[in-house]
Length: 230
Image (cartoon, rainbow, N blue to C red; front, side, top):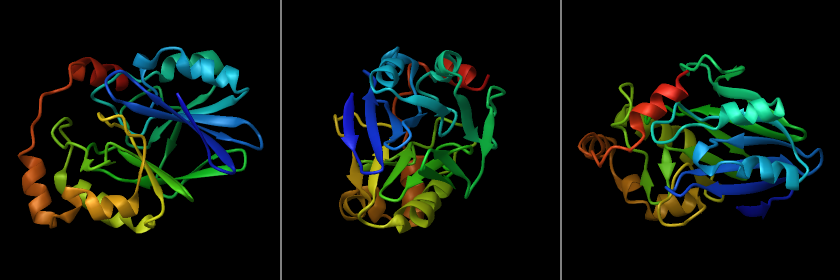
Protein backbone atom coordinates (compact mmCIF):
# COMPACT_ATOMS: atom_id res chain seq x y z
CA UNK A 1 0.00 0.00 0.00
CA UNK A 2 1.20 3.48 -0.89
CA UNK A 3 0.31 6.41 1.38
CA UNK A 4 0.19 9.92 -0.09
CA UNK A 5 -0.38 13.02 2.04
CA UNK A 6 -2.45 15.56 0.09
CA UNK A 7 -3.16 18.40 2.54
CA UNK A 8 -6.81 18.12 3.59
CA UNK A 9 -6.87 14.41 2.89
CA UNK A 10 -4.66 11.35 2.74
CA UNK A 11 -4.75 8.95 -0.18
CA UNK A 12 -3.95 5.26 0.17
CA UNK A 13 -3.27 3.34 -3.06
CA UNK A 14 -3.79 -0.42 -3.16
CA UNK A 15 -2.91 -2.68 -6.08
CA UNK A 16 -4.06 -6.21 -6.81
CA UNK A 17 -1.74 -8.83 -8.28
CA UNK A 18 -3.41 -8.30 -11.67
CA UNK A 19 -2.92 -4.54 -11.76
CA UNK A 20 -6.31 -3.33 -10.52
CA UNK A 21 -5.93 -0.12 -8.54
CA UNK A 22 -8.18 0.90 -5.67
CA UNK A 23 -8.04 3.82 -3.29
CA UNK A 24 -8.88 4.90 0.23
CA UNK A 25 -9.50 8.64 0.63
CA UNK A 26 -9.53 9.90 4.22
CA UNK A 27 -10.18 13.32 5.72
CA UNK A 28 -7.23 14.38 7.84
CA UNK A 29 -9.57 16.42 10.03
CA UNK A 30 -12.33 13.91 10.84
CA UNK A 31 -10.63 10.59 9.87
CA UNK A 32 -13.74 9.64 7.88
CA UNK A 33 -12.91 7.68 4.74
CA UNK A 34 -14.25 6.05 1.62
CA UNK A 35 -12.91 3.26 -0.54
CA UNK A 36 -12.99 3.50 -4.34
CA UNK A 37 -13.25 0.31 -6.44
CA UNK A 38 -12.23 -2.27 -3.83
CA UNK A 39 -11.22 -5.66 -5.21
CA UNK A 40 -11.81 -8.96 -3.45
CA UNK A 41 -8.32 -9.96 -4.63
CA UNK A 42 -6.78 -7.50 -2.16
CA UNK A 43 -8.38 -9.39 0.72
CA UNK A 44 -8.21 -7.88 4.21
CA UNK A 45 -5.78 -5.11 3.32
CA UNK A 46 -8.55 -2.48 3.28
CA UNK A 47 -9.75 -3.36 6.77
CA UNK A 48 -6.16 -3.56 7.99
CA UNK A 49 -5.44 -0.07 6.65
CA UNK A 50 -8.65 1.34 8.14
CA UNK A 51 -7.78 -0.12 11.54
CA UNK A 52 -4.10 0.81 11.48
CA UNK A 53 -4.80 4.38 10.35
CA UNK A 54 -7.69 4.78 12.84
CA UNK A 55 -10.22 5.63 10.10
CA UNK A 56 -13.99 5.42 10.07
CA UNK A 57 -15.18 3.98 6.77
CA UNK A 58 -18.26 5.90 5.68
CA UNK A 59 -18.70 4.82 2.06
CA UNK A 60 -17.64 2.06 -0.32
CA UNK A 61 -17.81 3.31 -3.91
CA UNK A 62 -17.71 1.33 -7.14
CA UNK A 63 -17.28 3.56 -10.17
CA UNK A 64 -19.10 1.05 -12.40
CA UNK A 65 -20.05 -2.61 -12.74
CA UNK A 66 -16.62 -4.19 -13.02
CA UNK A 67 -15.95 -6.94 -15.54
CA UNK A 68 -12.42 -7.93 -14.49
CA UNK A 69 -12.66 -8.38 -10.73
CA UNK A 70 -15.21 -9.05 -8.03
CA UNK A 71 -15.93 -6.04 -5.85
CA UNK A 72 -15.15 -6.29 -2.14
CA UNK A 73 -18.07 -4.05 -1.22
CA UNK A 74 -20.06 -6.75 0.58
CA UNK A 75 -17.24 -7.68 2.95
CA UNK A 76 -16.40 -4.05 3.66
CA UNK A 77 -19.94 -2.83 4.29
CA UNK A 78 -20.69 -5.87 6.46
CA UNK A 79 -17.57 -5.34 8.58
CA UNK A 80 -17.85 -1.58 8.99
CA UNK A 81 -21.45 -0.49 8.43
CA UNK A 82 -20.34 1.72 5.55
CA UNK A 83 -22.88 2.51 2.81
CA UNK A 84 -22.45 1.24 -0.74
CA UNK A 85 -22.44 3.90 -3.48
CA UNK A 86 -22.81 3.54 -7.26
CA UNK A 87 -24.14 5.59 -10.16
CA UNK A 88 -27.92 5.73 -10.38
CA UNK A 89 -28.12 3.39 -13.41
CA UNK A 90 -26.00 0.59 -11.89
CA UNK A 91 -27.84 -2.77 -11.98
CA UNK A 92 -26.80 -3.96 -8.51
CA UNK A 93 -29.62 -4.27 -5.99
CA UNK A 94 -27.09 -3.93 -3.15
CA UNK A 95 -26.56 -0.20 -3.66
CA UNK A 96 -27.47 1.98 -0.66
CA UNK A 97 -26.77 5.38 -2.22
CA UNK A 98 -27.32 6.10 -5.92
CA UNK A 99 -25.64 9.23 -7.20
CA UNK A 100 -25.80 11.24 -10.39
CA UNK A 101 -23.88 13.90 -12.27
CA UNK A 102 -23.04 16.86 -10.05
CA UNK A 103 -23.63 15.12 -6.72
CA UNK A 104 -21.02 15.32 -3.98
CA UNK A 105 -19.88 12.48 -1.74
CA UNK A 106 -18.69 13.94 1.56
CA UNK A 107 -16.22 12.49 4.04
CA UNK A 108 -15.93 15.10 6.74
CA UNK A 109 -14.61 18.28 5.18
CA UNK A 110 -13.56 16.55 1.93
CA UNK A 111 -16.00 16.45 -0.97
CA UNK A 112 -15.72 14.30 -4.09
CA UNK A 113 -17.82 15.48 -7.04
CA UNK A 114 -19.48 12.95 -9.36
CA UNK A 115 -19.05 13.17 -13.12
CA UNK A 116 -21.03 10.84 -15.38
CA UNK A 117 -18.46 9.42 -17.82
CA UNK A 118 -20.01 6.58 -19.85
CA UNK A 119 -18.11 4.71 -22.53
CA UNK A 120 -16.37 1.74 -20.95
CA UNK A 121 -19.74 1.03 -19.33
CA UNK A 122 -23.01 2.94 -19.25
CA UNK A 123 -22.97 3.25 -15.43
CA UNK A 124 -19.43 4.65 -15.31
CA UNK A 125 -18.65 7.63 -13.12
CA UNK A 126 -15.51 9.60 -12.33
CA UNK A 127 -14.81 11.15 -8.91
CA UNK A 128 -13.20 14.58 -8.67
CA UNK A 129 -11.26 16.36 -5.94
CA UNK A 130 -9.80 19.86 -6.42
CA UNK A 131 -6.36 18.43 -7.21
CA UNK A 132 -7.11 14.86 -8.30
CA UNK A 133 -9.48 12.78 -10.40
CA UNK A 134 -10.23 9.06 -10.12
CA UNK A 135 -10.78 8.04 -13.72
CA UNK A 136 -11.38 4.29 -13.23
CA UNK A 137 -11.55 2.56 -16.64
CA UNK A 138 -12.15 5.72 -18.68
CA UNK A 139 -8.73 7.40 -18.88
CA UNK A 140 -5.64 5.33 -18.10
CA UNK A 141 -1.97 6.28 -17.96
CA UNK A 142 -0.91 6.25 -21.59
CA UNK A 143 -4.17 4.71 -22.77
CA UNK A 144 -7.94 4.55 -22.41
CA UNK A 145 -10.32 1.90 -21.11
CA UNK A 146 -11.42 -0.82 -23.49
CA UNK A 147 -14.95 -0.62 -24.87
CA UNK A 148 -15.61 -4.27 -25.74
CA UNK A 149 -16.47 -5.81 -22.35
CA UNK A 150 -19.96 -4.46 -21.73
CA UNK A 151 -22.91 -4.70 -24.11
CA UNK A 152 -23.73 -1.06 -23.40
CA UNK A 153 -20.16 0.20 -23.99
CA UNK A 154 -19.56 2.96 -26.52
CA UNK A 155 -16.26 4.19 -27.95
CA UNK A 156 -17.86 7.46 -28.99
CA UNK A 157 -19.26 8.05 -25.52
CA UNK A 158 -15.84 7.32 -23.99
CA UNK A 159 -14.16 9.88 -26.25
CA UNK A 160 -16.78 12.47 -25.29
CA UNK A 161 -16.41 11.67 -21.59
CA UNK A 162 -12.64 12.14 -21.76
CA UNK A 163 -12.62 15.30 -23.85
CA UNK A 164 -15.73 17.00 -22.50
CA UNK A 165 -15.62 15.99 -18.82
CA UNK A 166 -12.11 14.98 -17.70
CA UNK A 167 -9.56 16.95 -19.72
CA UNK A 168 -11.18 20.37 -18.96
CA UNK A 169 -10.49 19.83 -15.23
CA UNK A 170 -7.00 21.32 -15.67
CA UNK A 171 -3.49 20.22 -16.62
CA UNK A 172 -2.19 20.11 -13.05
CA UNK A 173 -4.89 17.75 -11.77
CA UNK A 174 -3.52 14.32 -10.87
CA UNK A 175 -5.04 11.26 -12.53
CA UNK A 176 -5.54 8.06 -10.55
CA UNK A 177 -6.79 5.30 -12.90
CA UNK A 178 -8.49 2.00 -12.17
CA UNK A 179 -5.72 -0.04 -13.79
CA UNK A 180 -2.06 0.05 -14.60
CA UNK A 181 0.02 -2.96 -15.56
CA UNK A 182 3.44 -1.28 -15.39
CA UNK A 183 3.50 -0.41 -11.70
CA UNK A 184 2.56 3.24 -12.15
CA UNK A 185 0.21 5.00 -9.73
CA UNK A 186 -0.58 8.43 -11.14
CA UNK A 187 -0.19 10.87 -13.99
CA UNK A 188 -1.60 14.34 -14.65
CA UNK A 189 -4.11 15.60 -17.16
CA UNK A 190 -1.41 17.74 -18.75
CA UNK A 191 0.95 14.78 -19.16
CA UNK A 192 -1.78 12.64 -20.69
CA UNK A 193 -2.76 15.41 -23.10
CA UNK A 194 0.89 15.62 -24.17
CA UNK A 195 1.92 11.95 -24.29
CA UNK A 196 -1.13 9.66 -24.38
CA UNK A 197 -1.35 8.46 -28.01
CA UNK A 198 -5.11 7.96 -27.89
CA UNK A 199 -5.65 11.57 -26.94
CA UNK A 200 -3.96 12.67 -30.16
CA UNK A 201 -6.72 11.07 -32.26
CA UNK A 202 -9.78 12.65 -33.80
CA UNK A 203 -13.10 11.35 -32.53
CA UNK A 204 -13.56 9.34 -35.73
CA UNK A 205 -10.10 7.80 -35.45
CA UNK A 206 -10.61 7.03 -31.76
CA UNK A 207 -13.89 5.23 -32.39
CA UNK A 208 -12.45 3.23 -35.27
CA UNK A 209 -9.41 2.11 -33.28
CA UNK A 210 -11.32 1.32 -30.08
CA UNK A 211 -14.06 -0.57 -31.89
CA UNK A 212 -11.37 -2.78 -33.44
CA UNK A 213 -9.48 -3.25 -30.15
CA UNK A 214 -10.25 -6.72 -28.75
CA UNK A 215 -7.49 -7.99 -26.43
CA UNK A 216 -7.91 -11.20 -24.46
CA UNK A 217 -10.96 -11.22 -22.22
CA UNK A 218 -10.46 -11.07 -18.44
CA UNK A 219 -10.36 -14.48 -16.79
CA UNK A 220 -13.13 -13.58 -14.34
CA UNK A 221 -15.40 -11.80 -16.84
CA UNK A 222 -18.63 -13.77 -16.39
CA UNK A 223 -18.21 -14.26 -12.64
CA UNK A 224 -17.33 -10.61 -12.08
CA UNK A 225 -20.25 -9.20 -14.03
CA UNK A 226 -22.69 -11.63 -12.41
CA UNK A 227 -21.55 -11.03 -8.83
CA UNK A 228 -21.12 -7.29 -9.25
CA UNK A 229 -24.65 -7.00 -10.65
CA UNK A 230 -26.28 -8.72 -7.66
